[in-house]
Length: 346
Figure 1 (cartoon, rainbow, N blue to C red):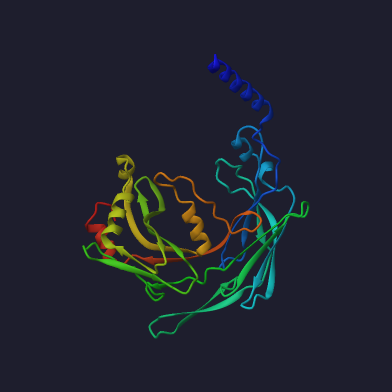
Figure 2: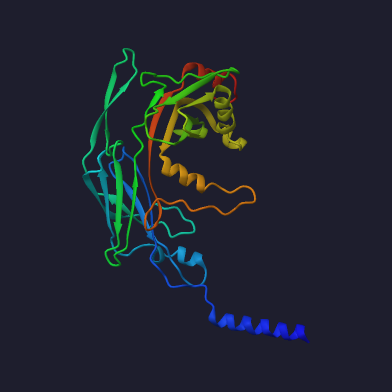
């Protein structure tokens, strides 16, 4: 009898809770800001949205732009602070509409972004080791790597404000291969490698080096030449300034990726012509590195992770990255390896 009475009380309590309890609290504005400053870009871009709250399926709200986007412009500015924390200039932002977002859980393809208005640039003199140790060229940068950049965002209707501050990744360049190098040298011998190096004084904590091989294809049934590009390496490197590309790794990657798996499609290829080795290096500062670490896939029993943000009053990140790209023709030795060691029609 006591068990039945206790069960009745639990059912009564549960029914009362069902009437009074709700999982939806009062909505409070939460601004979300994401931006990566790049000193080599004439325009800086920010993605600014708001958190949403509602009954029912979350994915329904994620797919609705009105749930995420502000339907009026925000006041957005970026202050440049010198070594003495003096404001030396203020960069203003305005909204632009893009149609480039891939489909997914959130609305696409239309997006509202904030893009910086026109502002002055800096000329940087780059010295690199040449035949006489005096190779010089001019390049353009738009942000000062010795300064800090402080972001201010204000909702003019609610008065809500968020801010953040970051340094920028310095000018990035390859130191090996040198600018005077006109061929990428690599062979298929067991101990062969090509060391790739880059500048070290760039305020970066994380690097991503991507290496691609370019070639052209000619077909029996078409007069057109088709340009192709395959990935050879993709390495994430923390606080490292060089990478050794092993020759056998390079050629094995080519051997696995170039030939078509479909025999009929491969039979249509008349000839392939070797072109360039592409080196793409992306460098990110400490903010970007911390964000990447926190958002890595979890392994093991601990699945909960802290949310990393450096946006005061909101969530998101303001960090920095930059990129350098080199295209270097593959040398005759490398072309000979493709022709003689592999059945790839070079």
